[in-house]
Amino acid sequence: MDSSRKVTNDMIPLYYLEVEQKRVFAGALEWPGWCRSGRDEAAAVAALLDYGPRYGRVVAPTGLPFDAPSTVDDFTIVERLPGSGSTDFGAPGAIPAADSRPFDAAELERATAILNAVWQAFDTAAESAAGVALRKGPRGGGRELEEIVAHVYGTDRGFLWRLGRKPPKDIADPAETNAAIRRMMLDGLAAGMRGELPASGPRGGKIWSPRFFVRYVAWHVLDHAWEIEDRAA
Image 1 (cartoon, rainbow, N blue to C red):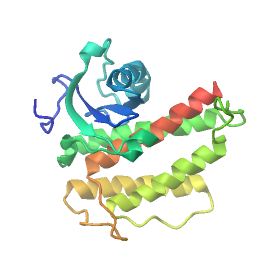
Image 2 (cartoon, one colour):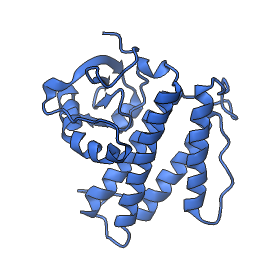
Image 3 (tube, rainbow, N blue to C red):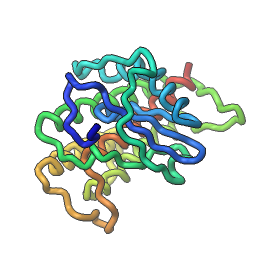
Image 4 (spheres, rainbow, N blue to C red):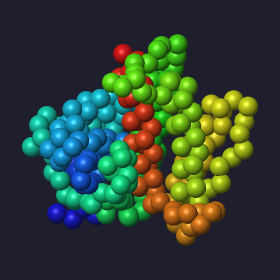
């Protein structure tokens, strides 16, 4: 099956695997942010299945039709990608072939809706956990809430370089700064749809395709939103 084909709602949902020695990520090609990992392929797919309903709640406000698979047999894996050191460290970095395709207007609107829903899920998780002592990990590790929020804001800021955008100057209110960064991301994605992204970033860094940009940002933000929810419970 050609993983670069255009995915529509009447097609079988397509998934990919990013495989490295110690960790495997499973992700949904048409649902950026729905990406989980495990020690092997079976564990990664099982984790993705387990998080299906949870992801569905995140994207529900978009009104997009999302049906969580009921068994692992519902997953059609169309691409296996080699991982890297970042994969084993815990971050998916391989770029599916389908992400090389440019957005059209309808696809950009859909991706924007998902990205906004993911950002809202993070903001809601952070607001709900305010004043709550987050559970520590088995060895007493884990960032405090303020540190997680600062990390996500700071990483989003850094992601702008991947669209050839220079981050804005800080505003007194960190939330306002981050709102400006999110607007710049969406502007950059729209420029990408029009074929207006530069060949390299302001510092010579690699530019990401708009599809992969949405995929990676959505995964990172949502991963930390779920971290907050789990540790605040």
